[in-house]
Amino acid sequence: MIVKRGSVVSHSVAQEWGIGKVVEVDDVRATIRFNDGCVRKIISSHFSDLHPADPASYLPPVKPVAGAKARGARKASPKVKKAKEAADAAV
Image (cartoon, rainbow, N blue to C red; front, side):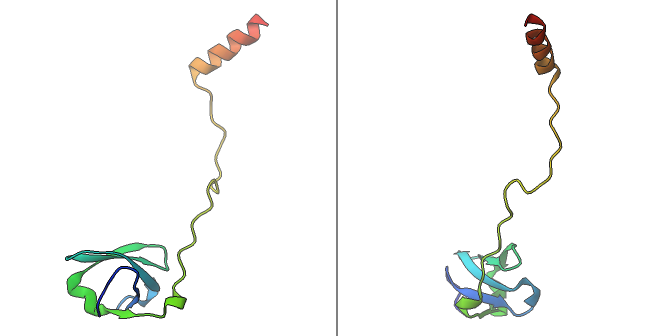
């Protein structure tokens, strides 16, 4: 198979990766973004394991929502704490 940027492929040995889209190709390797969310670099000697896939079957990985992690409250540093106390005392 001729691997070029923009091609939609599947890896015959690693079907669990899903369908991938080629994002970069050079003389040594191809960088492919797979449906499972991982970006993998496939060396040119393994291009024979790649097979063309239906472009409609490629779905870009879902990006995580920003700020989805639960975070605890931040503690004020001692400097900030002292400045707050001094401001409260001045009032």
